[in-house]
Image: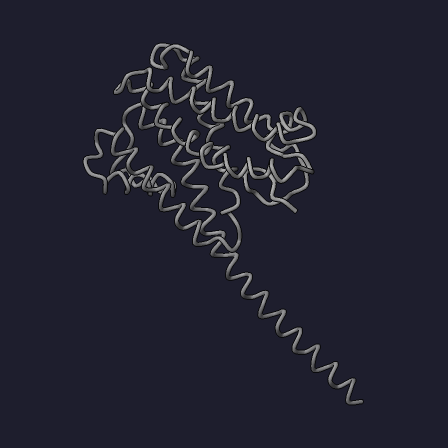
Length: 255
């Protein structure tokens, strides 16, 4: 059976987070999902620095506006390209509520006033950033498996490096990349030694994303390691049971 949902394995349809996909699809639709999976992920990832570009005003605001509109266009084109190959395109759109909400959110984030002048604009852009994070995690879901420890380790290193660079750029007390990586790890692990702490509003907001994303990734790594140990024990028990069963069958045959 063809994979459903941006290259993800087939699952029964559900309405969790509006991310479910129709129970049947054509091969052309599956190819379109796989084709647009990584461009959409790149567009979603670009909206995170766009949030800080607009907040810090270190670069022209039109750049952040262009990134938001480009991400909305990518999501819209991807939804349209997949829906044209389906027998029930409206059902496909209803089952992708999160993507529709993100498209509307990106357009609002591009058109609203500056976040420093409007608490409502800041709240909307924060909500859009949270939804983008959920959508990116959903896109990477095929890597998050019991047998995907290597992928999870690579993902954890990439997340910590990205967060370290973010703290290095946003926090004045972080003078080196090593300090940024250390702050990212202590924040993601919720250790909080207190030697370096976020002091600016931008760094504090970034710390929220680091805790949500970094702690989740580190938890997945530890869970995958624990699952490997449990799976090894289960296999040993199954081997002992099968060996005992073979001995009993051999004894019955001998009788």
